[in-house]
Amino acid sequence: MSLYGLADCNNFFVSCERVFNPALEGRPVVVLSGNDGCVIARSNEAKALGIPMGCPTFKILQFTDPSRVVKLSARHLVYRDISDRIMTILRSEAEHVQVYSVDEAFFNVPYTDDDPRNRSFCEQLVRQIQRKVGVPVSIGIAPSKTLAKLAADRAKKDPSNITRVATLTDAAERDALLEATPVGDVWGIGRRLNEALLSRGIANALQLSRLPSSLVRSLFNVNVERTVRELRGEDCVEISPLHIKHKSIMHSRTFATAISSRQEVSDAIVSFAEACATQLRREHSVAAEVMVFVSGDRFREDLPYYSDSNSIRLPEPSASTMTIVNAALSVFNYIFRDGFYYRRAGVCLMRIGSDAHRQLSLFDNGDSRRQEALMKAIDGINSRLGRKAVKLAPQTTRGEWQPRQNYLAGDNSAALKIYTGMLPQGNVRIKKIDLND
Figure 1: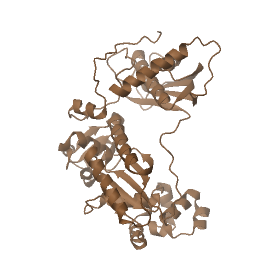
Figure 2: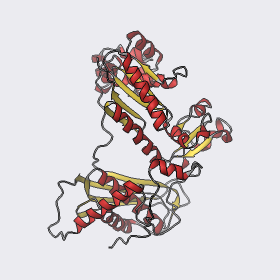
Figure 3: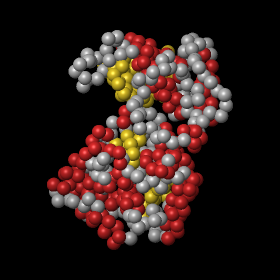
Figure 4: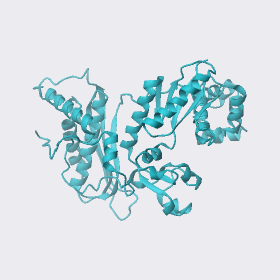
């Protein structure tokens, strides 16, 4: 019998912050969403205080003295970089690694059945990730992915399990854990499905696993049937790869405050278009259409509300930052209206195809090849010196469209940049790039 392992990072965003600030160990810590709106990650100490996931920041007062809790604004680029390092270690040691989320990945353990060497292998993985990255990881071993998630969760929550590895291969042990697991805690069982199961007397995972497959399919759907089979130890859930080519790419943001300045919103559009183009090139794709939208704040009765969107077809499919930014700005200038306050804006690339099969214009004068060479050079510099070593310069310096981040960690920023590969190593200074050149 082949077995799966699931590596699950413990309180991932909080653990990433503790890498750079060990003084946060043992303290209640929460990481906040964009514009510091609500809680998206909690340390065990914050969970013990009763602070729920998704709790609005201002409601933390209801659970404890806010001064007891360390509030941190999210730094997703840092978290993604640390995640990439962890996944690289997993790929170097294990076979058939399937990344499920930024902090979880399935892999095949090297030995079949209940071989004790599987546990030793996973314990070594936990120690290696802790030593090289500094993030605690728990691993569950089981014959199916759903059971592996339950095993990893048990390893994470059991304080006596110092190895942070749990196996779920013994039938009696598996049934005991399933009986103790509320049906709503099973992977793939959402709120509405949980209510439907409870109304039929199915309260725990063991009861769900013993339902006949034909009955489950007739009452619900094939996905629930697969979950039932997974709880019995059958491997029947496929993981979609995270790094796939998208049919559309969008970057958007809700601003920290409502903005009326054309130039401020224009700078946001440039930034979003630049991010879209960069992602497009990472996927070796090109886009043929650029859509831009702007929107006011529908909850502000004291401000007039306006929103609009429009798109433009490119003369030929492109992944050039200059081409996409120019197209986005032309759409923006068409839909923007003075006298209104804007709270949200975004850029979306559509009609995406492979860069290996794109159709060049009949009147192409070689400019597309020069643009490709320029983008390749910029991507190479940013890869070596940091993601934003070379970028389009904003026309204003206020940056009011940037998200609110009042709780950024006050650690050693130089150490952070060295760790994440974002510290420039030369005297590279890009002041301004003329979009018309």
